[in-house]
Structure formats: C-alpha cells, structure tokens
Length: 164
Image 1 (cartoon, helix red, strand yellow):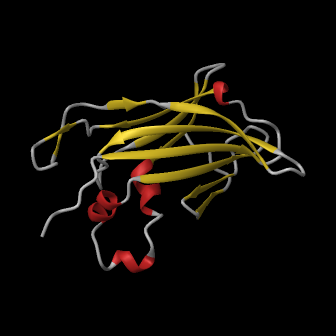
Image 2 (cartoon, helix red, strand yellow):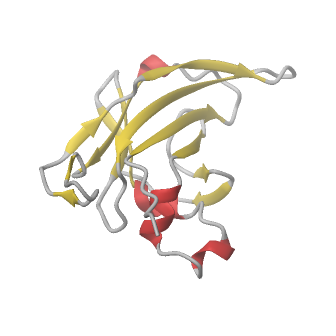
C-alpha cells in the first residue's frame, strides 16, 4: 500500500456582504497560522513554531446581475494540515488592525467531510486526501455579528456571538 499524502493545500476565502454592498479585498488582511512548516522524510510534521501563511492572490469579483454582488476573495497555500493542530484562520480589518475573525480552521474544514467517509477514514486521512477548500463568510452590514460560515457547501450558523 502506498500512503496518499498531500503536503500542500489551497484555501479560498470569500467575503460577501448580505446587503449587497461591495466588499473591498484591500480593506482586509487574511492569514492562516499553523505549526506545520517542517516535515521529515515520511511527511511527519515536526514542531518548528508557528508559520503565518498569507494570500498568494486576493481581489474582488462580481457575481449575479440583479442585483450584482461584489465579493472579496483571498487564496492561501499552506503546508500539510494536521488533525488536532490549533490551525487558525484570521481576518483583520486594515483600517484599525482589528481582528474580525479568528476561527479554528481544522474544525471547520472537517465539516466538509461527507458522512460516508467518517466511518471509512480517520480525520488525518481525510485531510491528507483533500487539498482544496472554499470558505464563504457572510457579513451583515460589514459586521461579523450573526454570521453564517459555509465551507464547501456545509453551513454553520453562529448567532449572537462575537467571533474573536
């Protein structure tokens, strides 16, 4: 048996305002922090201190036509994701350097695992097989209160919480 391990992952983060107001990609800073940048010959991750991954691309895109909605997006490439790591997805507002989102990324990515896979593979095996993720974050009046998080089609509703 040959173990299938993907040592790189691509994560696309999309910010959309529910009211339809344009979201400016340059108004936000995106990052993923994880201790996963050092690996052995057999793909075992060694502790090396947190690495902060930043977007290799970001911008805006307009979708729809009545009304058209302008969203912001960022794509970040990371090293191997490890189940149980405290991998953090953070979004900051550039105007005042405020942390507007700080979530445990691995927990959210595991929500994308289909029910049939849960009995067939471990969380780590799932993370090693998947290598692209899309996360859609909905804003309400450019506020992070009462948001919906959609990761590869799964919806998590966070009501009356302040995500920090």
